[in-house]
Amino acid sequence: METTATIEAKPENGTETDFLPLNGTDYIELYVANALQSAHYFQTAFGFQPLAHAGLETGWRDRESYVVVQGKIRLVLTSPLHGGTEIGRHIDQHGDGVRVVALWVDDATRAYEETTRRGAKPYLKPTREEDAGGFVVRSGIHTYGDTVHVFVERGHYTGIFLPDYQEWKPEHRPQEVGLHYVDHMVGNVGWNEMNTWVNFYANVMGFRQLVSFDDKDISTDYTALMSKVMSNGNGRIKFPINEPAEGKKKSQVEEYLDFYGGPGVQHIAVATDDIVKTVTDLRHRNVEFLKVPDAYYDDLLDRVGQIDEEINALRSLGILVDRDDEGYLLQIFTKPIGPRPTLFFEIIQRKGAKSFGKGNFKALFEAIEHEQELRGTL
Image (cartoon, rainbow, N blue to C red; front, side, top):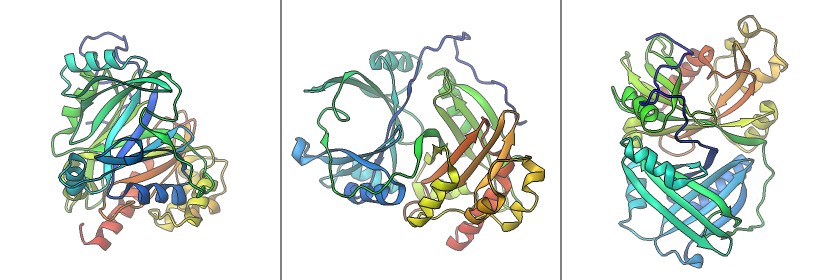
């Protein structure tokens, strides 16, 4: 498999028509053991702002959710209120993790019909929800593992978030750190499953393959993986999909699959327009990042050319740089945000580049291997 920037997977109808137009990421819902504490963490550590709450006070009897927002990024943190629930079983198997990747559409009914007739397994039939703020239509389909996509049609709604939610106004409001939108979300799938899900996104959702990486591109002396990047028609949604590859030791994808209990969302990449300031603020809030060897920066300018940022600032923060034909990008990865070595975040700033940091793979994976060695899971 060669690294390529061409489109390989295409919709089954062979046309260029975007039968599933997506406006962007609507929200990401995580099932977590304690929604209030998780919301507090994302506020305090990442600068998210409180937006909405639903639970016993709003008529729910089975679960509670807190919604936090920064820029266009909305996170929904949901916990069960009783034992023996679907949410509880999800947390028991996976730990805290992403359950719903919600996509903003103009017509949730059409999105459901187009995807299910192409083979998607139904998750939520088109459902109208309403309150004093108007109405929302949501529908949904299953994707890899226990992850689902929910289509959200909110053109007739003016409420705070969704029906049944009320405004959440705690006094605790730390400053934002400059996060603007979801750049991409990466899914880890099992052995020999990558192409299955590449074809799913191509044939069921009309996505195209932007880039592919094989185990020669993404490997070290010990571990390897393979990855393909899928994107919707307008490029607003990008889903890289990883699978393990044979190596001398256990790869990060294998470790994820073991501890998550199956396929799922590995990391959420969020964009900033000043990564030095954002990462500086996050470090002051005790967010921990992977650290690459200091030697990575010795020949950085020889590898990526002239950049606007000071090398010493990037070195001190551990920020990586890579260049493609369109420009360059800066990126850094947090350590896992929970007790299991599963979900983490990427902070990314694009200065023209449309790629995903191929030139950083070796340094990044060696940093991950170091963490795996400390955990005793390499």
